[in-house]
Amino acid sequence: MNKHRCYIQGSAAISAQHTFDGDFFSAPMVTTSTNNLVAAEPDYKAFIPPNSLRRMSRMLKMGLTAALKAVQNSGQPAPQVIVTGTGKGSLSDTEKFIRDIEQYQERALNPTPFIQSTYNSVNGLIALQQQSTGYNNTFVHRGFSFENALLDSMLQLHEGVGNTLTGAFEEMTDEHFYIKSRIGFWKDTPTGNAAMFDHNTSGSISGEGATFFMLGTERTPNAEACVTGMKMLYKPSAEALNKALPVFLEQHGLKPTDIDLVITGRNGDINTDHYYRVLLSAHCPATPEVPFKQLCGEHDTAGAFAVWLGAQILKHQQLPDMLQSYATNVPDPIRRILIYNHFIGEQHTFFLLEQA
Image (cartoon, rainbow, N blue to C red; front, side):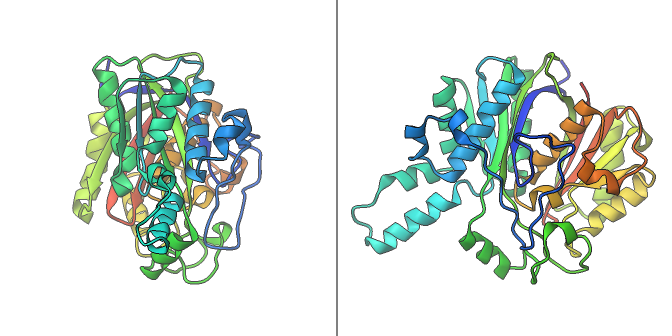
């Protein structure tokens, strides 16, 4: 097995769009007039018993449900390994626990918010539900959280594990949105995701969601796409970034002209969007490009949503209607997709996906 290659045998995503159920490819884009894209939560009762639901936080419900749906969609047995990434974990539980400390002066605290606020609480719950007693790990590395989870999963598969459940989850709260707004993460005036590229201003639109993949070394009947490569760069100089892309492609036996579609993490922030413009104009000037953060918002693990989107495009061999206006000359068939995403200009990642 090529250690840089694994199949997405099944996946699921909860986001602001109709990604969990419904027809994502023909549905119109869900929009907001604010600067915060809120995830459209599904009916959890089909996946979680009602007596458990009432004790679970919003993040736990989203993470567990997306994970169970990914396993279900893969048609595979319970995962042998569970690896996830998150930038902040369950923020609502963390904030509740901190408020209780102040309110009750560190006495008679309810332990539930603390237990559910730990970063690995989603992993533990998935393992309990799936009776999975194998390797279980959570990465909390800001904009590289999902990327390290994916890299760890690839290494596990290379060492002989049959399959892995790999994913990412993120939650936005009013308090955290306010804190991030104070340091310029979001646009100053209400912009909305539909117009986020039209305003030549700093800041972006926030988002949240949960995305999970069943990964394996074998091409199964339900396989959606193949992850053939990934490269992470931390705070690269312009020169280093410019050299990195052709080297990355060459390592996989490719030239820029072999890429059929580029998915980018453009988010409407004039302070950081130039990375995409400069790199693609230098190496892939004629390749169709579609952005994805108008669909899911900006957050630490948005890269997981991009991988899910790329896998769906390769599986269905078409662009969703909501992305048609960005690229009209997409080749047929779509054999290979390059994803380039960065988080606030610091953590840069290339993903390479191919048809399964």
